[in-house]
Amino acid sequence: MSEQQKPNPWDMAREQFDRAAAYVDLDPGVQDMLRHPQRELTVYFPVQMDDGSVRVFTGYRVHHNTALGPSKGGIRYHPDVTLDEVRALAMWMTWKCATVGLPYGGAKGGVVCNPKELSQKELENLTRRYATEISVLMHPEGDIPAPDVNTNPQIMAWIMDTYSMHRGFTTPAVVTGKPVEVGGSRGRLEATGRGVMVTAVEALRVLDIPVKGARVVVQGFGNVGAVAAVLLQAVGARVVAVSDSRGGIYRPDGLDAHAVWRHKRKTGSVVEFPDAEPVSNQALLELPCEVLIPAALENQITAENAPHIQARVVAEGANGPTTPEADDILADRGIFVVPDILCNAGGVIVSYFEWVQDLQYLFWSEEEINERLSARMRDSFHTVLRLAREQGVNMRMAAYIRAIDRVARAIAIRGIYP
Ligand code: NAD
Image (cartoon, rainbow, N blue to C red; front, side, top):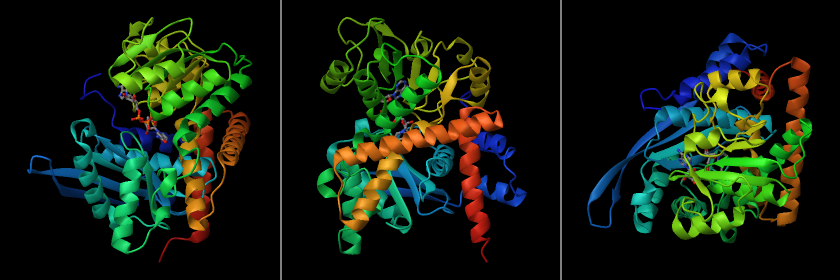
């Protein structure tokens, strides 16, 4: 798909919201309010590069809504980051937090950059300066960032340290997804993938498909996709194809997800994994399987490829991987979609646990975290499923109805200031 044809994620997020708002008895003024971000910040900041030159980077931080609590959302480093993408991701965070019952609003951040072209020192300089620029919005009780595409625990540690240096004391609760050594939570790194696994298994059960032997295809073998693959393999599923930005690999008899992960760590990609056929990212989406996990970027399942998708369950590890047109096609074809705002909420759930632990300076065991995470994911899945059945809508619509209803009720109770 060419750049011009690529749907605008903000248009898509608004369309999804408008579709769902039609089912909720929403005041038109509140609907209009929720169609806009609450506030957005654009920053242009200089970074000293290793060769002594100075380069100016563009970054964003958007708060979509804070009716339910402090805003929460990751920070993405990618050359294609746009303000509209960040707006969409911030809105999806509002619905995600509300779907799984967290006391948070939605936010997102991004920097237009290619971190693969930056040295560690340049990445640190960029992160610390971006954190300084957006620190007017960040606060442990106001706006709490987290990792997203191309950002990781080390980057979160630099953000925490930068914020803490300015305040004069260590403030671990200002950001989540940190290393355990500096106030991170056990289980956070795997949380999103674990949640994807839990909801994919629940979806298979609803459809009466045995988990054992179920064929799994993963697009985007990163933090979310690789963990989901490893954990689904651990419960007996068969991972038959995976991919990353360089391409995909396919083995109908099953790949060893652990071995693929080691190969990716060693070579930087899944491609050229021994004894597997190469497959393009496009072809991979259309492979025969029981569970398809898009876990890369937006707009992967479109009106063009949706008619050819053979999966029984699409578990959306990525944010916004399915366009609204494709959604209708998948629904008509009886494909069970676990929507992003439910499926990949594991990360923000354990981020919430991390924040609670940081505020209390009291840390939980990994076992306790994984148990609480799985319980909340299963509970949210079945709440959304019940609503879907009651209202005769699909899972995405039901998740949106639940989320919008929660946010709208909070707005109504709080009132419009002044
Ligand atoms: P990541 O950077 O760890 O992994 C992304 C993977 O996708 C990489 O392997 C990359 O090579 C691959 N990729 C990039 N472009 C691709 C393409 N066109 N085709 C196939 N593969 C491609 O990022 P992540 O943290 O795993 O995030 C992946 C998705 O999950 C994003 O949509 C993100 O917003 C969403 N998400 C992440 C979290 C989290 O906790 N990390 C939480 C919720 C949602």
